[in-house]
Length: 138
Image (cartoon, rainbow, N blue to C red):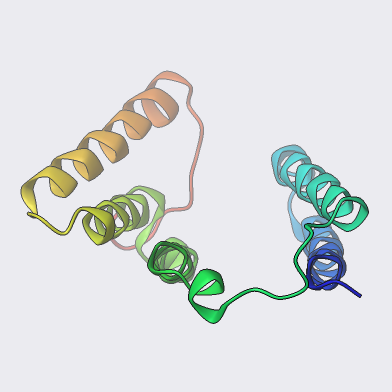
């Protein structure tokens, strides 16, 4: 079996597990996570039906710098989301993510993170009255 098909099966199982976890959410907040999971399941099925032509991937290709940065920052983001709050966690995620790819200075990633988190706060919290997880920072 091709590696892509094995990955597709693993992703489908993971999607099913996360779908099960959505039943723990309040009913009014289930729709968006489920929409994302339906999309994820669709892409997993498409990967299974139309795998790539290669049987193996090189280690450097699977664990490229960009993929590692994305995985590490996303894991940190998810881990601290409930503790520090949505906007502080989002600020830190964007800051680390942009800085991980830029590596030239700290000012530009800081400004991008501040503008993104501030814009999200103004749009969602203030204008649309959407409540987000609050932590000790906000």
